[in-house]
Length: 548
Image (cartoon, rainbow, N blue to C red; front, side, top):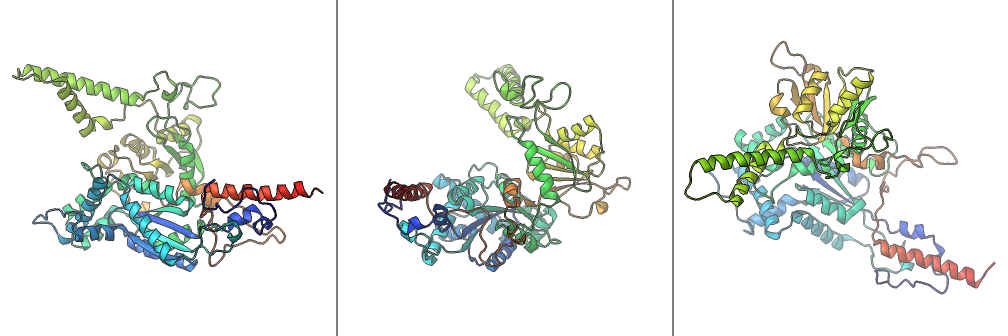
């Protein structure tokens, strides 16, 4: 086998220095002491301050900190005229022009190199250059040197990613070393931050929309598809202590077992777990409802209802599974009905075009192009009412009604995806007081249709949030989730070896240089395989040559 540890014999003749150590001891010595944290957040959320506080906390734990600022790379490309700037409109403010050109530069570079993860590749290069210049670690060593090298303890903070492909690449590259931190802030506070920089209200709206989802540009920014991939969410609002949130996150990923899930994390994890039951062809969504004490009252997922109540289940022996994925054609009924509607629109369109007696007949290919354009550029392609599935929020609400029990007044609902407008109106009607969500849902018209009843991203106490109408009581809060994401929940909150076996005393994490809760190694698994085989062969040969 041709590996970095090629000097290791597959069957050594006698016990070597390595053979005196257990295989796991050798592997332990090859644990990486690095950590890579990328940040994602909407424009105006103040990622820079969160980044700075994270650096302070990591330095307290013995890390050297290297910041990788992607906007600086983009600005350098603009300064060096590697990317052309956008023409400045007469009314554009200087700050708007700067932000808009950075957005433009990112898209143009991705498009030019046909790589949606180009900025992540640049971040990897910056990390590699820094490591090569500062590391004393010996990667290409033989087995006798394992455990003698000193891997560098470094933290790399990437500010900031805007596309899901960038996150995907960084996760593949750095595996357990990588974490994504999502930073959120209320719309009002982000708007004020940008306005204080001298950006007009119309400019702010334009920047925010491009930042969320740059329509018309396949290589543009996609923060809406990126933010929900985070391992940890921090709400960077003025009234909150972001440093303590960051400290909690950093200590959790280093194995601090004094920390347990809070109310929000428990509720969202229950929603996430419920969503895994869904066999919906579109997406898996989970929801959970809790009372004022945080106790779980009900959970739900998006799936097809069955006669007698509830949804189809994998292990229901009383009836066959009739969910879409198990039907003969295995097609989404919502998509089928939307395409029927598209076809009907095409037929009506052709009828009217024929009635115009145009000199040139409309070809079938051009008619198809019209149909597809209507489907893609109107809300036709976003219709949701033809789905067979009950939505997760509704499943949770209906399950309480079906079996009885405590009511929903002042309850809290957790959902992995922002509620659609249909679920939103039922949430309001049910008397639920708070909704926490992770993933945005662009098809939802909840904000447009229910501004009278819902307060979006308003952190004020519920009792103080009221409609201007004097007859209207408190509004329902819709808030972005904050804390450990469900994808990381079981990793950081699983407690093993909390105490010493002999004394029963709690074992705290080290004050400096604590180990991470998930280990990652400097070598490829094939190299570790070679080491394990070599160790086994050494011991086996000794047994064969000197049987007891």
